[in-house]
Length: 288
Length: 299
Image (cartoon, rainbow over all chains, first blue to last red; front, side, top):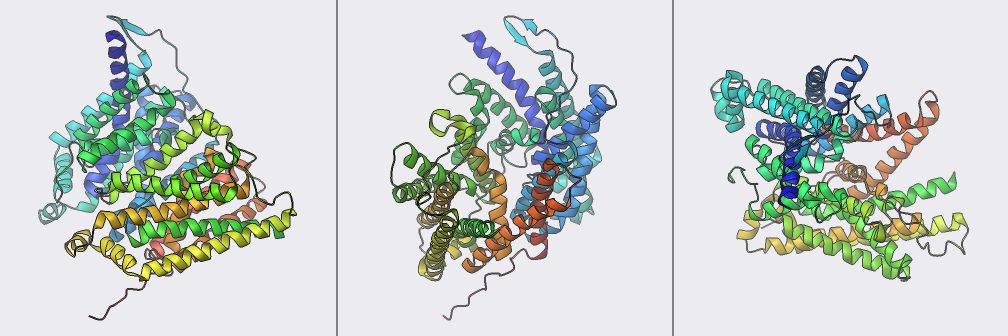
């Protein structure tokens, strides 16, 4: 029994690490631009397709495909934002959020137009599970989780140790004050969108590796991703990581009592529970 | 072709009902609801299941659909009462997806992704298809007129004024002695009930429902209708709904000229265009084509 629970917790942490990337992407954009950009759903899908093309089409290794996924989603994210969302931000965060739902539907259909509805898979060798101390883990899951951890470490290093990263945090903290210091907030907004969209794409490709690549690859996990970001408190990156890990584990544990198809509803239940106690999430900011 | 136009008229009416329901929750009370398709689905499933499984008469099924959707609205409003803008948007969006998930997975109840077919369609057997369509058209638009008139009256009544006050500034409204939560609950229940009615009418008009009928795209349609018409304005909501149906159906004919494309490509082009259109409308007139005029009350 203990083994079984440990096994579920381990699987949950692996899933959570992958979910954390789009959740961080969503929350980074929120932190700097102060609106919920639902387009991350389709940006994750775009990352998955970009990675699939580079890996399957060009035959490049997975690591190169992940970088391609990051860049492709980042570029599309910035372009979509510049065309559809940026002019609307003056009308308020909700208008921009609604437009981002429309944008995600547009992007999803661009993907569908180009690639059709047929699911694609990565050409991956099948390995035997790695076993240790009564637990087992799929090499693919392990590799995905490690890739996610590397991406997160890179992000934390960027935010913590580079001047550009610190500038970004300053804008997220207090836009007006950063403006007084001569920081160009618009440039930082573009950077945040690129980073956020890129992370969504990176995570989207990992999800594609784990499941399949189709126009709804990103959308399918979005309930869990938004839940992770909300659970941790919108705008908090450590919160998004914690939220994603919690939701990953909770989803695995839920399979003990619930049909696995309800996994994505677990995140929803979790945010309802947390939000009714703390309306701004676990690590969210205090009400201004 | 005439039947087709009449059917489009029925759908325009259903969208108008949904836009009216959303307008009370969002336009008047200012609560974002990106999960409106969830209430639509609840109304549709409730009425379909009660009439198919328990052989209830259709009017009772519709009534039950309204009540259950309104009850769901109260639950959602209670849970989200303290949430603001973005959080509310995410929670309601999630709510609709969970409803769709339940509809797709509780096969014993909803028949899963196969959906429920042979939903009773009153007078379908006695009337010719053309007459059935016309009767549905009349019924749906009577409902639109009734709900629209009721809401327009409520909107001008003290109830509507309090809702607008809450929309503009919740704190001020509560300082003025208004029980904010109580007003929010009633607005949500009213709006959700109308969304449930639209769902029930949809189920009995089409005769078949499945989880796919309740995707986030429907929410986009209605948000587009309301935004195009102007949030807060009942007449605008109805006109917006008609515009949306004209546009979505207009793109259907576009497919005939694009013979080089596959059906999937044409479908994706249509869905993508609707999304783009919403973005364009938001850019062009965020306050709506027929915006709510600010009322000035003499002191």
